[in-house]
Length: 91
View (cartoon, rainbow, N blue to C red):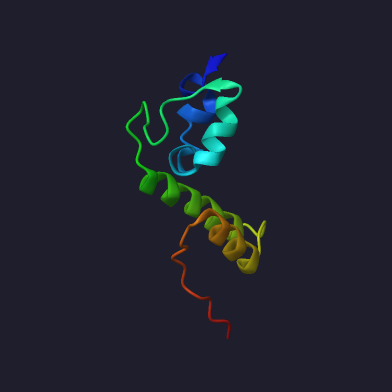
């Protein structure tokens, strides 16, 4: 089995919130990858930083028109994220 820490998915820091915060996701991936101990990161990343990056991706997708604000709120809630966005006032 390959080591998760050696994959692009890990080194890109795109999955830190899942890897560090979801025991279920961590267990699922460990069925086909060698994972670090749950709650630890070989690169020193913190769960809070991973969640912040994930929230930034969601907000960027709303700005790009890929997601609606309602879809973003639903996704963020399911992931346990809080989006810090200001409402747009249309004139």
